[in-house]
Length: 118
Image (cartoon, rainbow, N blue to C red; front, side, top):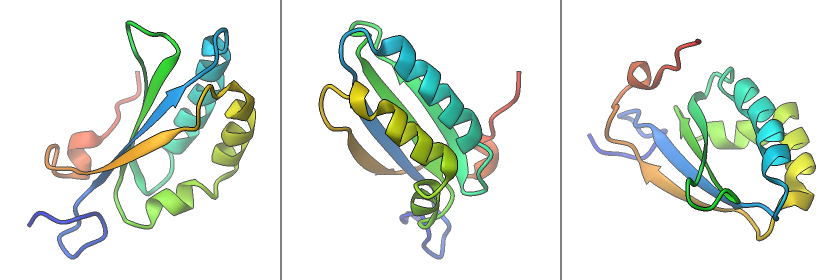
């Protein structure tokens, strides 16, 4: 079936968080975000947590977050690493962060999203 995360068919929820940082904050944002991302992928409800930077405008980033349940985003926002990240990056924001939620079709299972350690 095609349902939102947390429904009977167990669909995955993808969230894209768009971030624009102030000039000169790019490296500090990446450093803070890598700490958050490496801890976030250890959470049981997170299938994937990517940090990407726009090639043509280095001040723009997107966090690509894939959750395995409807409760996982709220659980993530209660973790120490998220709260630390939120505090660390607050002054770096050029504009407030925005996000969009997506229904995920492919990969259709957690196995397809599994992150491999290098």
